[in-house]
Amino acid sequence: MYLSSTLGKVLHFTPRQDGGALVGKLTMSQECALVAKKANGVLECIKKSVASRLRGVILPLYSSLVRPHLEYSVQFWAPQFKKDRELLERAQQRATKMIRRQEHLYEERLRDLGLFSLEKRRLRGDLINAYKYLKGRHQEDGVRLFSVVLRHRVRDNEHKLENRKFHLHMRENFFTLRVAEHWNRLPREVVESPSLETFKTCLDKFLCNLL
Image (cartoon, rainbow, N blue to C red; front, side, top):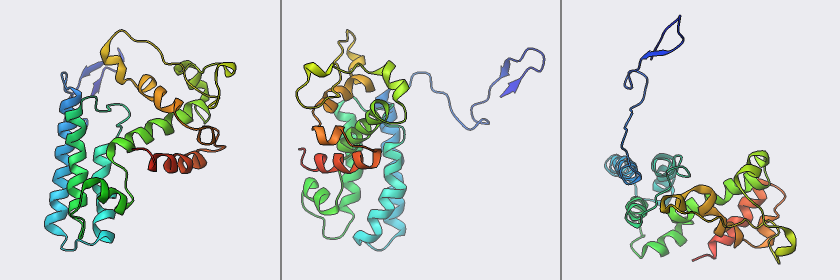
């Protein structure tokens, strides 16, 4: 990037030299395909370079080297289409199959390994961010993002969110819209957690029982 010392404007921009690449027409499906390709590439490297298939070896490698690719800034580019969600999920399915004695169904492998599906982890991330905006350190911003239903209209969860109407289908996947319904289903003891860490613990227990 080159700046004019007199005008203070950008005169020239070179994406490669500045550590990035600009893609004007990148869709969310293309983003999911790129993410899945990176994750599968790392998995292939692990498969070829690591002889052990023990849970204590493969699971930490997956959690630290592969899953971050599948979840980086995912609250922003959350996959909207089923085919994209399945594409990402297949990377985790492949990783769990690499572990010895994990030949049964994917859902059973997740339970045995103490993992959530990627879709459930995205939901978890959405709810954690919602907590930060509604009851955590970002409450000032939360006032502008969310509309909380008045208490006299609520029976259990006293922090229910208003389900806003939208006219464009693409807005359905916006964070503030997609998280409202799930937040409203949370029980009182989860929503009223006194701290973020307590909220995460209670939320994980709730999600474990969620199909």
